Image (cartoon, rainbow, N blue to C red; front, side, top):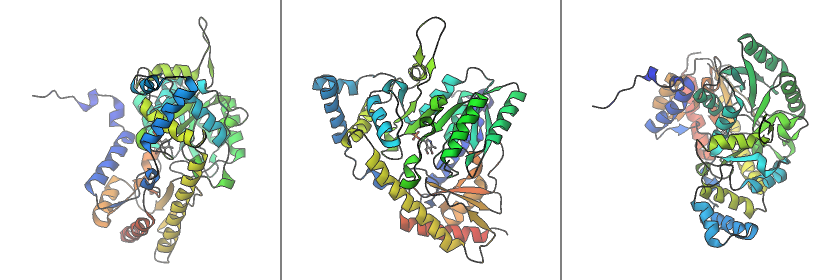
Length: 432
Ligand SMILES: Cc1ncc(COP(=O)(O)O)c(C=O)c1O
């Protein structure tokens, strides 16, 4: 007989809706393989067409030989053995950040992580000292961040996001609420560039106001840079960390959207100093690397070599690749918006459905007149063969009850056309 655990006897995060929502979506996609799915936030598979994985890895090996004076055998060993917890490609990532987004950081202040997801776990674990330390998140919020907090048992307080990203008054209200509950708001998570799922980009003024509010409330800003590359060239804005007062920002990035999610390579920039009464001063990045030593030990050196080789191929930058990928992504997003206008803007549909019009990112946020939940998704999948993500998963407490998220990133243009036709049939079937 096998051993049985009571679910209530396992960690509370396992019963949390956030974790459940991701596995539910994957499970629905598996059960309806012929449905068109607007759910995945993954890049389009043509992104990999020109990737030469062995060539990239080899380029990085040659780089280790020339830059670090290693023999070929020793350079290969650096890829095959355990590696430093902080990472192998920190110099290359630092130069790409300076070149591509104007962020100057020392390589020592960077931790190379297993995707941005691990960076979220590490920064939260390092910053939150006790169960009274809260994470504030701008809502709607990427589920991976809420989920990371749940797994670590870090309490989360929502901050309502608006058309400009985040409002200073909302930050104050959230921190006051936490204080009243006897806690301290330790950090605020925000994705300033076409956030997943709101599609909002914060302008320079909003970024400055955010930093001012963070200073006034003594918060660390955790900035997620995942979708900055999708900004139209004229609309590109420097990361919050690059502004005055950016010393209280920990920036998180990923190579999943412009290189390959399967490589699982991301990073955190954590250049804050950590002092101790006895002993040497370190960087927050060093403390995060200590935690990483007890989680994933190090990010796969072979995967780092792949990303390092891609950076080297373009002279220590991903700028050209990011620009081309961003342009292709924008054309997919504007195609989705055009088809929605064409199919869902007629008199029969008026008042029954509405959506936002982001200039970048992967996502469109759609409002219906009915409750949008897993049960409705199931009906839509079975009867109309089209899938999307219920928005309520992106809210900490309440919100998004009548909304869904559409992703334009993973589908071909002709599949988007057919998907929207199916969506129209589904919306037409809903009660007014
Ligand atoms: C805002 C945001 N941050 C981070 C990630 C995940 O990045 P990674 O694949 O590097 O874990 C995603 C993926 O969808 C995302 O939307």
